[in-house]
Amino acid sequence: MSKYLILVNKNHKFKDNNFHLVETNSAYAKVYLEEKTYQQFLKLKDYIKKKGYDIDIESGYRSYEEQELVFNETKMQKGLEHTLKYVAKPGYSEHQTGLALDFCLKENNNFYVDFEMTNHSVLEIVASVSFQFGFIIRYPKGKEKVTGYGYEPWHLRYVGKKAALDIYKNNLTLEEYLERIEHNARNS
Ligand SMILES: [Zn+2]
Image (cartoon, rainbow, N blue to C red; front, side, top):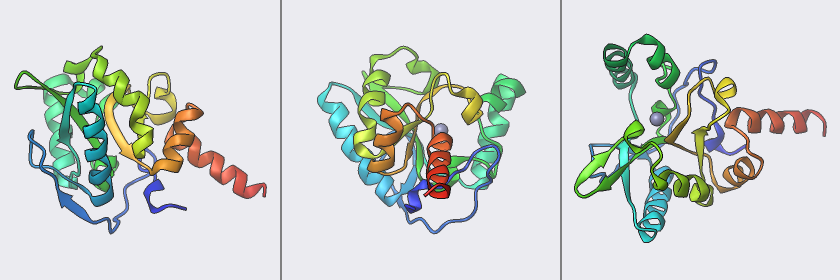
């Protein structure tokens, strides 16, 4: 199975991997990503630019300590319930793999992050093409019970083109996709 198909969620703790991280040239912040994830994001970014929108990386790789900081800050600003719905506890975040990123939108020299992009047409465009670059919308609408998280159209996860196409076409989550693979392996 592809090394990019690792599962990190509320029930699967992140285990150290040896992904090679690179520094991105995000205009928003100092961000690191796994190398291939970054290369593919740049291609997606170019494509979206041709559609008239400028997306960048708000957040990528996070260490355990950085995830802890995000969790605690969100808890202070928005309360525990909101935080548990949208932010992983340290040790259980995909962001610790380097394969996940939150994109933001730059418009008129302002950056728009997460909920500030709500209902913006760029979200629809990204959702409809990101599979071509190997990304999935990791926390889709209507799958909150499966993923354990609220809808996050800005959180992309790199899984590789083959898996991304399958997941997109069949309206799956990564959890459901991996379960199918396991099921098929058992029955073959
Ligand atoms: Zn995220």
